[in-house]
Length: 313
Image (tube, rainbow, N blue to C red):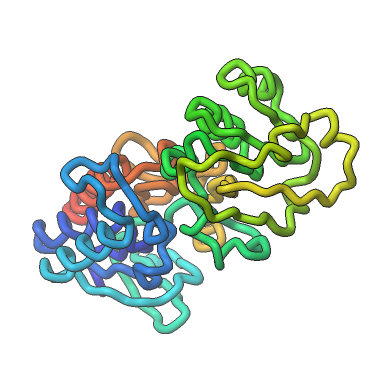
């Protein structure tokens, strides 16, 4: 029986584990290998204080090594389900966690699952992740400033991400079932560049990613396209772009624990990172924007301090 189980081995979970060990708690981190974390695909992270110019994988492996040295335990597995269990008199709740490789128990639980991508990956998505495909424009957008990018608008936040890329001088192709109100005007206000609104984001089958020096010019043929002409083209259109941002909604991990409350596609928590389930806390991207390392690390601290207080009650 562990004191605290943490589902997720990203910055939020690893931050929480460090403080758990500092408070002399037995803590288990359940996660996939660090290399499979979306952050690991980031070739440059330049906005996390104290680690300028680091890769995402370097940040993850450094945090992992620090937590391991502090005495955190790791289970490399995929969490499948969580079941609250009540026992004793008075009743005390613990959690049984079924994973792809083992079955574990803990007195409290911190969910640091990240913003789950959800759904079936698009063809080529995993192959090019970190090499032209990204899940976060505000994270990786600076690598594609003044380039041509495609935004697959699968979430309500995708319009803001497209607007952000336009501010960076990118030529933005936005593909979705419906155009968010005013997005075309917002992007034209920033750059006056083209915006394609034809197509269905769920039907995007491939994107050809041009490998080129960052300072080389874009192809003139692509820039001559207009949103009107794209409306008249067939549903399947091939665009040559330099980056593809697949922006899915952050789906709360209710498949793990069905009683969890969500809000806007993310886990609903209070200021102390309590969820609506007693003994369950959450931190990081699974609680909402901004999807940034600094925010995840801070929330991991708050969540674990709340868990320690819960265990002491």
